[in-house]
Figure 1 (spheres, helix red, strand yellow):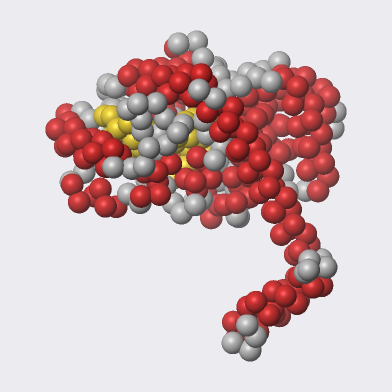
Figure 2 (cartoon, rainbow, N blue to C red):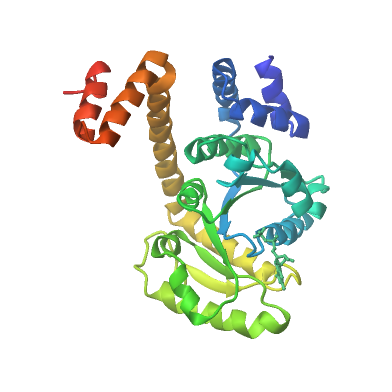
Length: 327
Ligand code: GDP
């Protein structure tokens, strides 16, 4: 594979080259990994920066409808938009290519938009780790906005927040006690809470829900990376388009403030360090189970631990000693 050529074509914004580069990055083959790293080196010099926009919300809240409308709004403003997904459920169903394309019909036919279906990997950590690399590919390809979507399950939100400049939480209008259903940890990583479906009969409910969340956000500890008034709750309608323009203005206000106050580069620097360490950690874990002998040993010790014949710490010590990883 001619990596120089691929890099040039990615930088030139060729969609097919970008798709190919993503496939390379997502591949689990060792030779592909080496090429992906080489590609990463070649692209490092472009220094293009997109706005990395993370987004989370439970199924049915309107994520795909929102991305479709919001994506169309941004492309109409002259921006190029890439949409990626970190979807823990697709790890089981083996990807959702058809799903993602039909979910965002207009956007998927838009020449200024690039929608990448969820990768079908078995491990959430692995999916997120590669998504982080895919974000940088999209940046090198000249996309202005990289929208990273995730279904609100388990650790996926935190992972997406850790690769985003601005993190949005999409919620549906609901009764007051629903507030309890949103975990505090998720509220703490959200930069903006968007109450979707604020249209028709749901409009008053959406306004009330929004007020509830605005109140809840005010009770959270103030973060250094936020200007006055953030994190913020607001209502939108992905279907009618109401509030989308305002949401975009607020995102820009926040991004601009962070840039001017050193929180943009600061956040990216912290994230880069995090992903570097995560990459090393995951690589070591993979190394641990690469040799069949080691795998057998892990399994045997795991069984002993499960049976209560050995303490977890003792079993771990045995493995770590074998790796020379004890002091
Ligand atoms: P996702 O699972 O989060 O991607 O949600 P979808 O985008 O597939 O939307 C789930 C359902 O909610 C669909 O029937 C949408 O038509 C509906 N929906 C999404 N956004 C809105 C909205 O702004 N207003 C109303 N009334 N319905 C919406």
